[in-house]
Length: 589
Image 1 (cartoon, rainbow, N blue to C red):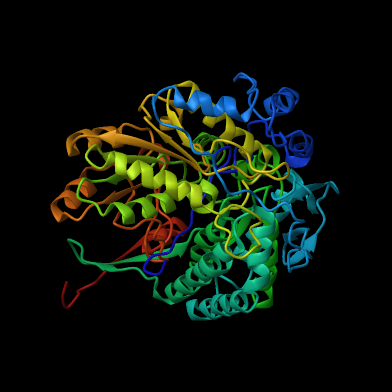
Image 2 (spheres, helix red, strand yellow; image 1 turned 120 degrees about the vertical axis):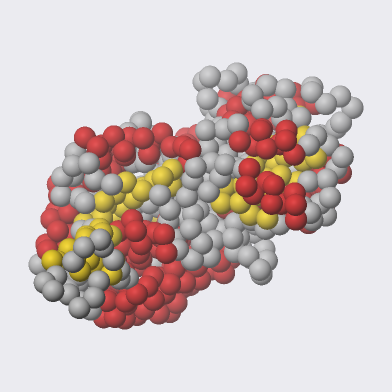
């Protein structure tokens, strides 16, 4: 898929996975998931087996929904709103052989504070799990309030007294460049850790995400010695200049869906500007950040400049957001958790906050579109990364003149999607991150069926182990349905019909979110009309998920505030100071 990168973003707790796990709401860890997984339904080929399996299936669904008695009951419900259309069952199953052994060892499981790997002050650890099986990969140090205090203290000392902000920008850039070289050298191990802990395919991690990780650090290494102020003319005998100074200690919280990419989006610009960092990992995916941060010190980063704390949101996340000695916060995650981050920042020292939050992005297919290309692009826009993208094109609007053709081809493409062990070559879709997200997606599928949408294909789990879900397609989706309004964060494509541009603009903008949008058309006037009318931070025309290091990303409305990546992100980590000097008898002004 040359021509554009098929990735990234991140993101979210509850829905993305960091802060609803990061700050506040009760989150059941995956340690409990094995019981649910082992209770999953077996193949149901006769009524007796169906009846026996019904209680097990119900354990996977929310108590707010009625238990499903069999897989065929889902399918029959799906037919109700589209008479005469049969439902083709998803045909690809997860391989039943033993999971492939990851080609990497887990060595970093402690907290990184002041350049050293140390145990949590409490001595506690928590398990990080393999989404393919629900089995424990490793036990990781569980950071708490005392550990956040230690990390912030180290970061403060490194900023106030250490060499990092006092280095020339060129010297800082050389260290960041060396780090990028080490990332490239160890790319196989890094990709394997990311796949093992997250469930994304190894091919995606190795071929797309790790190269982007490296590119982002090299991009900001190049910016380090190009940050400067201005000389400003004033009305009077004054010499006026502006200084761009590092802001200080940056607190950063990254999500589980793209752990390393978002790590790069936050850490790289912060360090290029001369700041120090305390980074809180998502509890679902702590391993890769600890691994690469060790490489940063191998590259020559001074102790205390980058500190990494693994732990849970209500304790470690809240402590970081509330800390009086943190000068800046950057959070990627769910909108609900973003509100908590803002509140904690305001109630402490009123620290500035950058937020990249949820989305419910429209993907608009116009009547002049090349349908085959549009189907493939819409498929990518939704199903990439198991649908766990904040920018996912989760509302597919198709013009009524091409709707039926698009629907049939979108359904066929979903049926061809290859799901299985993400370490296996040729796999397109791995498991969802954990049992919480897995069960949430199944609840939304059930909701879509019950609200009258047509389940065209998918809708069920695959296999009896791990968190695999069939690629799912709904048609006849109405704007007031939950699957049309809420961020599902899973492999569920909802296809809507529209008549004209004015209608689709109104409907596309009728959401609290405004992160991204996609437009597929051959008409430049149509493209220009939509790009200016859509209330979104990014609009992709005849492409999707293009995340070059220089392209800013951020949202309108409740999708966040501020921008990450590109030149705009540097402002997140700088203070602007005006210096005014009185001139005596100036020769000129």
